Image (cartoon, rainbow, N blue to C red; front, top):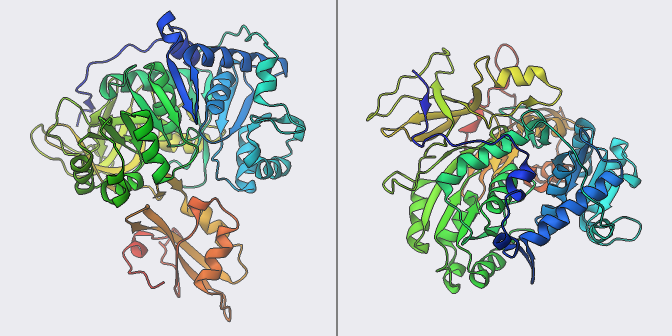
Length: 528
């Protein structure tokens, strides 16, 4: 079939940096608006821009220059916003690390990205130092945002009052961020996203999300994730809204922040949707200020979505994204209230997509007014990544010669051109919106002396969406318990990657080429 274009008209995508796109057009009125709320303090747009400029100047004074990579390892805060945009303003590339990473995971990203400066917070410093040491990055590379003895802090850097450097970069080719994603399979890879990629996706989402300067957005989804980074942080600042930051999710605190700050807009992942739709605590708070909830990062069940809308009296949008897409490709349109919230909506402006039969490679036919058969979704647009860092083979396997990116998701196209995700071709497990690559867990499990072979698959879970489930073949005579194996993994990975079910099996089903047949394992009833 011919590719399907967005039902929305194309938008202009300026050839500019992320900094200029967000901060370059601030008006006198904008300067006094509250940009960020953190605890009982606030930061106006004027104060934020000044801090970003000073942070960029301080980085330049430390020798950070265009082409350098700066690691940013921090929870949501005003400090994250200042550091992130300061890194980009200095012409460097930001690689954000998951706040829950274990030292060896930190070391892997530092080595692969080539980061030469490390920005973090004191609560994460012990793990950060251990990971940096493993990667060969010295203590003198560190900036700790909150004042910590022995390290330069955010107040120290801003107090230098250094002018932002005069730099010139090509936004179409200069890397703004280097987030890490497992793509459709395998271990995490550096996703090369330019300034134009990020600017494009903000511009693509603006007419569909309709965030304005009157909106107060609760930012609990992590800024280190591309969803939090470009949709929550960057798009809200571009729209001149107010961000209320939370460093971690706690339901009572989440509801308190909505009530006290009169939040109007929520970006969530499905586990939060479950709590909002079902938890009795929700009824104890005044959430009447809310007008919109956007769910992304993992599929949201239609029945659950309808229950949430009824309970809160809000509009609900579902979206689809990937790190490789900067991240959004589809959103539920606001001008069609009858469209099922079980769909991921329609393509954002300037984007086209199609479905391809994964067995034959042939395009799946679609006729308006009818629902198509299933196929893998391919997308093309200005938000598609440049490729995977140092991995041309994975890049070529993901982006075809015509520029279409293979998402690894199996879709059906509805009567109105809306999209339904019905299955996954890719092997990734999505736990609470976080990517968990089975291959990474299998590698950890195989270091256990009692394990002869293993396969890890996704197992359905109401709260988490999916949880990692391991099928383990033991060495002859070995007898560790399921709990012992789960503890072994938990000591070596971030909390969201923990194996939560272990089943013992005589042999792992594999193809003639030796590939694990995960589909043969997924349907088995859990025994532990």
